[in-house]
Amino acid sequence: MYCRTLRTVLSVIVLLLVAVAAPGPVAAREPDGGRTQAQVVVSRPIRPAGSADTYNTTITVTSGTDPDDSKSKTCVSEPVCTLRRAIVQSRGLSAGELPALINFNIPATPAEGYDATLQVWEIQVDNTTDLNAFRYLTGQVTIDGSTQPGGRSEGPKIILMGSGTGQKTGLNLGENQTQGENVVRGLGMQNFGPHINVNSDNNTIENCWFGLSSDGTTLTSGDDSDPEDGTGVALQSTADQNTIRNNRFAGFFGASVAIRGGQNVFTGNWVGPRADGTVPIPPQFDKHPCMGSTWAGGSGITVSGDNHQIGGPSPSDGNHFAGLYLDIFAESEQPFAIQMAGSDDENLIQNNIIGVDGADSPVGICGRGIKLSGGNQDTQVISNTLVETGLSAILMNDSPVTDRLNGNTLRGNVIKRESSWPTEQGDNNFPEGAIAYGSGVPEPLQSFAPARITGINGVSVSGTSGIGSPCPSCIVEVFLDDLDSVVEAHQSLAVATADGSGNWSGTLPAPLAEGQGLRTMSTVPSDWTIPGLDAGTTSNLSSLYGGYSVYLPVTCKGS
Image 1 (cartoon, one colour):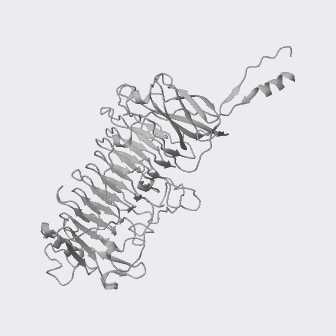
Image 2: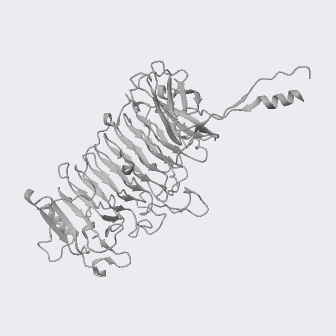
Image 3: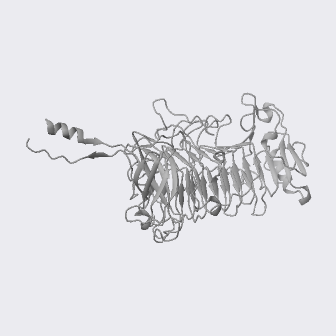
């Protein structure tokens, strides 16, 4: 009896204390000597949304009709000024007549496309035989649907509706790189492919709806599950320093936005939900079921090229992705939110929220959150929130031949998921995870062990380099997790810099609670800390520190 009692007393469970998590993501603190954002992506000034412009010419659209596809009729030559004629007229303006504004003053009558219930003007675009619905904008032209008097106050008043199968390109911003500085503002666009094509520099696309019905509650088709085939906005390789902000994209089978070129900004947009930011979920589910004929939020965005800014330094700059889903073969991978593809250097992905809709519901997405591929280098993935991604929250993968996934910094990202991460998908030779590595990730990074935690005392946490992975002067980030079997990063708690021996210490925000644990990530300070990889490369998440059961050895004699 004594021995059994002694075993019971000595068999104890020691729970490491962890900081009490505050709701929502907390930005990591940048230690002295750490690589700052400015060293990677220089945020360029962009014109504030809604700022006033000065125009030398104003062309007023007075009709919501589109009677023909003439390439020569203008608002001067014809008694009725349509959008098509206004665009043709803008092409003939001299340099002294630019910049030009195309504004709207269409009568509120059914004959002019006015829907009194929705308080919008629907312009049915002529079913031209050309590949482009309209002629190209040739620079310094603003089309501003918000100038239309009357109508609703929430959402675009002017809706452009493509004809036929939706394969015609809607608006083209520039025939070449020099015909830029165009602005498209306050339009709804339906049934084009792509809706806006950009070939030039310094354009702005803002406060528009793409792929949504006129009331914003369903997709263009009027059905929750039938997406468009095309793309919302396509930036070509000649398109630099463009700004896409505060728009709504939903229901695209192709990428909602394809970003190419360099130094483009994508900020404050909503991708996947209805116009009000919500995602309709069947009542028997607590998040998107990713099956059957449910809300087809469509695909996310693809990014190739250099120095792009997806989100930005302020939380208000972040983009929201939720409800991304396509009703496709079960063997096919569901669409990702953000894919960095092609040869990509020095991009910034910051303050984006993936998997949470406008009602703060964790509806998730059905594919991966952020995918770094195609030779991605020196990209910063900073302070993003990824909730209930159907596959990996962050995936790194590349062709083993390229082997360029290098110098990518992960900092302050929050990752949450209730159930276990999926196993290998199809022909992939890697399991999904909070941060997953494909076969194209350099072996030295795959095998690099992040910092260890060796002590927790109240709010003090300390540790050293990972086993077999010396990391002098590394930047160590400490994350909160719970004690279930799912690898997560609920909150960034502390950032510390290791000394020359790899030892480090930090301060947690508060003493710790039962049922929680800690994980770490390490970012190397110099080339070759991880063999062959550059400064700024961040490791995977560590094992969980916390919730250990410790059993002391007991020897009973004479029993």
